Image (cartoon, rainbow, N blue to C red; front, side, top):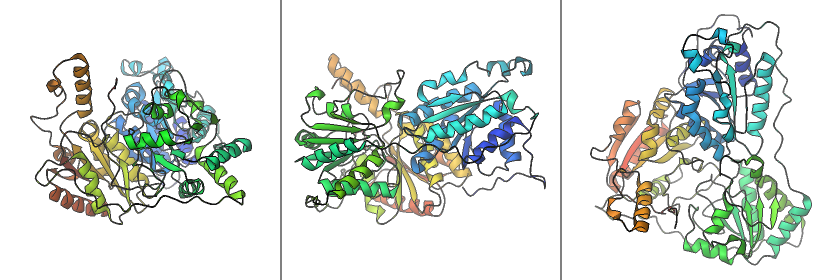
Length: 590
């Protein structure tokens, strides 16, 4: 973040003198680098403390034009780092704007410190009308069902404990956002007594390992299997964890599957990686599951839904199944993001990366175990476009163009569209791909991209996202923050001028009811007139071009765009694509 917004400060450092100074000091104490915000009077005291007490340093403020972007930028930052960023939301109204983003991050199991405000809680401090409608008796109730914890501290000492506990909980697996609501009255209260900030002794606990007997049992299963299958789901961004996943697969000769919904966890060019990263199971993938005699799921999200695509009676799957996950610690009754109950023979309550390390250590300690021979790596053909020259660009062709131009560039895909094929653009490291938005809430893609680019600004990587036009249109004003703070990222819009996923749903309903499928487009198309997406980007201060309608121009535009991003600037390309998906999603009832 290059832009300098240093405040004018007195020669002497500001004293810890106000209630809100404590909240700001705690963010600094916890090592929070950035806070995204959209201003509001409910936290004006806190805002002052961030500027005039901390000097807008550690954390730096990132101004956003909408609360959606506040949360999605913090979400993208966490996806790249596994660390929390601050997301500040104004009162009940700002919080309600940001709720969808919080739900996305919750489903994605990402850490985040969401700080809100209410009040003043004391009625005698409230201004007429506005402070009354912006005061809530239990503001945390708005999001309590999809955060890990929330609090509304009532004293300076309680503010300290709230931030300590919140940072502990959001970084303890399974991770999820936490919410701290600051009373406007307490923020603007002069401290009546000295307040001592804590020492560094409140770190989050290390994620748990598995019992040794369980590790031995799963090791025995993998080594005794004829056709073992490893499902790598959620995983950290650490290179050592990535290397251990590869080592486990090679020691056991297990075929590997990964999910396009989750972040990159395994090299997709490896000969043991049996299929392109999955959104839905292809016939080939279903056959691999049917043939497996042992399946080890390592924090795979929706394991039962995965098996359901092979057979409607998942309890009849013949393979012995081990499932490694801590996710049940966060399951509650409001959200169904716990998914269907899978048939599991060996449940393992442990962190997946730690369990992989335990398995590798155990297997290597058995001196007579030799790595099994791997399948012969097939030569990969040069990626080719699905559409012929002169035809409308196919959605998959954006992936092909990126693969063609990528060479040795250190690209990070921060987001891709729902129909991403995944078969021509390989993932070679843990920062190559950062997964989907968690809760499938539109408007998140632009902000997630900016948050990832902010986190990786000094990592020597080029952040790229491929976004749908609907996602971009709902989140386009996030680009102003990228322009203002000079956050380099490339936004590629796969623009089919439609809410196309819903067209498929309307077609499915029409077929079941014997009605005309030709009407599926009504109320779905974003056309006549087409929206000038490049114009929207330029209106936010981001250089843009398009619409691009042919492959040669697409490759040329990508070359120009990557040069601009390497020079430290955000850039957008609007690519007109044909309606359709490389991998069509399921329609309910199929």
